[in-house]
Length: 142
View 1: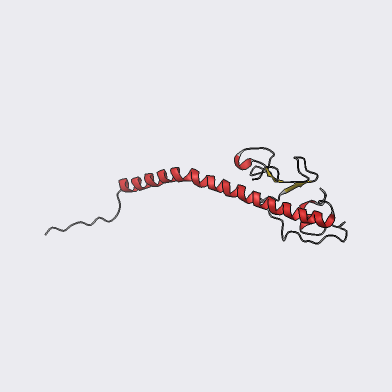
View 2: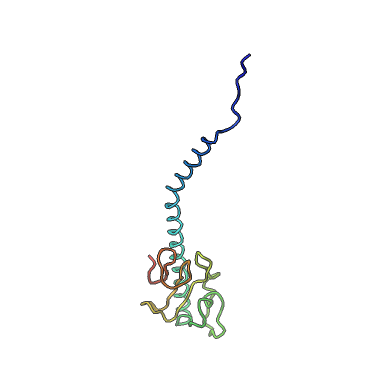
């Protein structure tokens, strides 16, 4: 009697072929995927800065000036201690953080051709840089 032996699993070569195919797909798709992540972070930064800039304009309409450097962006969420009766906030429900979890920076008066500067220093938290380390502010967003 001839009994046919059933194959119980995959051979080592078959498993290695599958691993190589997955690695090749990852190598082709990975750079595209990471490029999309950086693009999404840049879009979020641009949207956040536009929202903060709009809130600052409303603050200025009510108070006839932008918040001082000492008051900072917190003046958009909570009334500053020295606020005259013109504060009609909150101008923002909560202050957004950049995609890396760091609060946006504020400089008044601005030093880059704007009345005020709203910016983030990127992943590294240091001025300057390229790619994800680039500084993004209301002077260079699209």
